[in-house]
Every structure is written in structure tokens, then in C-alpha cells.
Image: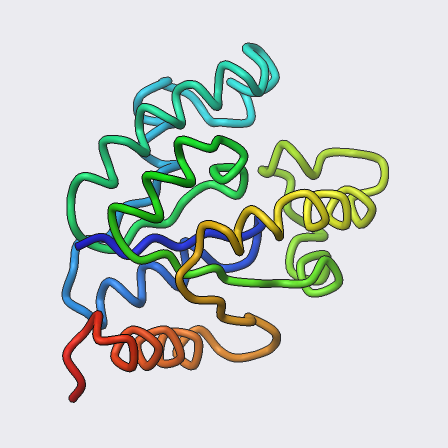
Length: 173
């Protein structure tokens, strides 16, 4: 079974995903890392050179492969923009939406220069726009929503495990 994490850039998908995988003793995959290995360069560089559409095509292929396995999967923030990705994520496993407000994200990401979508004059407005566009898609895709707010990574992992146990996805301890 695959447990996929979706959410905006900086919502904690990779960090929480790694800890969740460790806790559940499952393999961890980060779709962005798999994409970078495939394209042979950082996503930001590929984005600038080839454009978002080319990146999204590769993302569909990589996600198809990764959702056929088992473990914990951290996805890219825009993975839900593609309907096929949303369907595959939802039907092939359980999806947890790590919901973060634009205000929380700007606090975490204000010094981040690696996220291509935030390299704009007004990153806060960009995060608000991304949230408005993607929040309904994350909700449509997800089986569970966890508000990231201020909890520690360990607390978020506990919240996810508890939801998965209550839903019967994981055996209760």
C-alpha cells in the first residue's frame, strides 16, 4: 500500500514523509528526487530551460511508477494539477493533504531559493494564488486532511498515524 502526501510547497511533505516512513517501517520516496534523477538536473533548472508543461509530463510518468509500489510518497506541490495524477493517487493508496496556510508557508519559505514557483516579486501573493487554485484539488484527491499549523514533525506524524489507524488503514496498537 502507498501513503501519499500532497500539499503546497513547504507544507512538510518530504520532512513528514521521511519520519512517517521510518515510523511505519516502510520505504520512503520523494517524487521530486526521482524526477531530478531522471532529468539529470535540478527541477528549477529544468523548469527554466524546458518549461512547466515538460516538467509536468515527466511528473505524470514518475508518479505512475511510484504509485504502483508501496511505502510513503512525498509528491511535488503541483502534482494535483493533472487529473490523471489525482485519480492515480486517490485510487492506488491513501492520500494525506498536509494543509498549510500561505501565511505559515511564507514564514517557512522566505529564504528558500530552490522553489521555482516562488522566485517572483511577491511570493506571498503567489502562495495565496497557489492555495486558491490547489486547495480544492488537494481536498478532492485526499482521504485525510491534516492541518500543519505549528505542530512539530513528530506530532504531525502521530496525527497521520492516528487517522490511518482510525480509518482501518493501519492496525491499531
